[in-house]
Image (cartoon, rainbow, N blue to C red; front, side):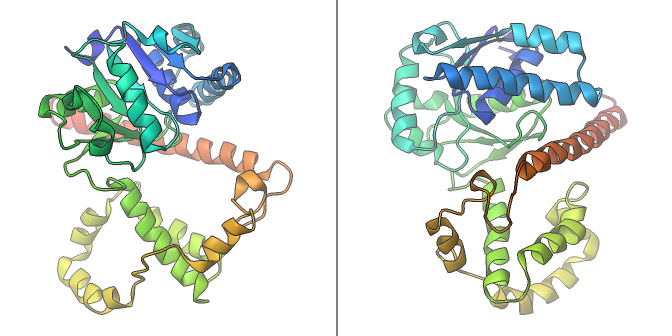
Length: 324
């Protein structure tokens, strides 16, 4: 089956990720069943999808008519039985291995044997999620990044029993949706992206806790130097352009000095213990008075939109150069 032949998509979980994933499938022309235990969550999902689409329309990546047609393809439900007949499943429920395992067992009883069941877990090993399943070869990781309607990457993770055919089909689904798949060939915790992200976070915490820099200056150092390169050059391509001999010389003296902490820093644990969770509680490394967090997210998404347009343009030029 080609991904364009998929008739009915089941998206399980209607939070930020589930809503965005349902949106993308619907915009690609698929009928979508969006499930949540909560009718209120489903209503918020509908509102979130409309808001997401408004930004895409503003950025001229979506027309109002296509957006409206896509929303009409999404059917919301609180009855899991309604996923029957789906020929592809995207799971996006709470990050709890037991909950996900039980859900996959239930889903196997509702869809046909050949249906691929994908999980948007950000770090639970796919092999763990396969443990109770009768058809573990059909379980695959598809980790989208937040916000899913804007960030191109999807990590496709092969569990211990996932078939190669299912991995390749999941990658084809990603490309069909305009996403950039990468394959996680060994089912390691955190996959690729979160391992890279938390390696950086660990060093950020060390720099702050040891009085090297303030949170503001750590953020600025990433945003306006190394991070400035990343939308154009990945770290390894950047290494090649710098010269691996130079990288080796720096690594030789710097690696021993980098943080190798095996548990979260005391400062982070203390903030959480005090109930300072970040934007959602009004305070974390920074303070968020009034509607500052909401305004930051709006500005973030507008900048992501511009990066997405540049990314899509680069992909189109690359395909043209290869004669595709």
